[in-house]
Image 1 (cartoon, rainbow, N blue to C red):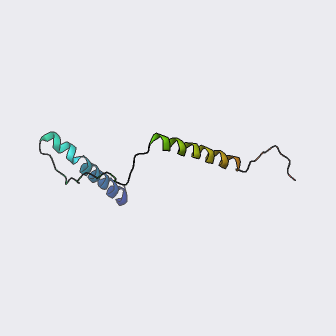
Image 2: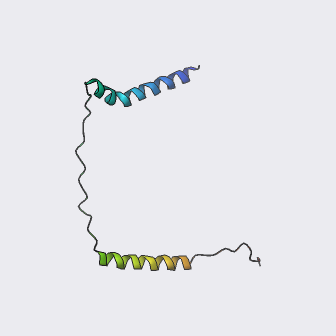
Length: 82
């Protein structure tokens, strides 16, 4: 084995041990506590959309999609080229 392979193998074992340490320590009773982040606050800029507004927007969206699909260029492989 080359030196690079040995170094990569050792790095993988160390990474695996570091990832599994909290779970294994919890089984033995000596839990390793990691610093916890405070919970994220909910976005206050979000708003509730009423059903009436949602219906109007969905109708407008459907018309927009139909208009865009109608304006798409088409390709017919059977058509003769000029």
